[in-house]
Length: 171
Image (tube, rainbow, N blue to C red; front, side, top):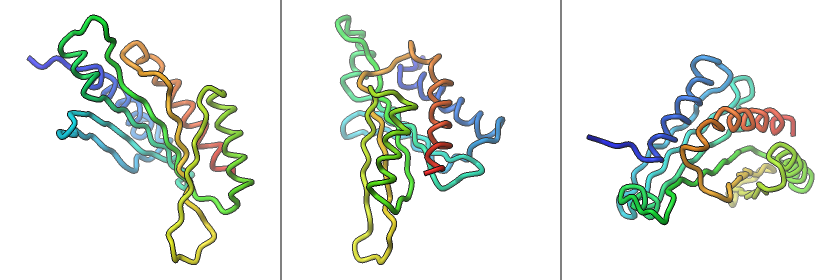
């Protein structure tokens, strides 16, 4: 009999909540989905990317990861370890004015997510292209692992993501 891991339980809960926002509430469009087992390092990864239905220019991405150490701790029931998953959030958008817009983005994210989740903004541009826009990948990395104890926080997490999308679309 298959016994689901912390990763499996969180993945299903997150996936259901995000798909409800797409199918039932019709407020987002899911643009990409990842469900990966990395056999070379025995790691699991789930990701789902979405945008607001009426504002598709900014996308949000939720990533859940579990590495071999956490998977082994759970399967082998190691008493001295609490297995969990890493949670990462990304927001993708195009910007033109680096100093002004990046500062606005940082203020928005700090206000919504509080100072303990400091955003990391990575700008990129294709070399040789004559364009004045940059792709901004904004990362929020949680400092601790999550497990089933945080499952009831998923709706609030998604509310914060939707609010972030709304505010980033104003930049």
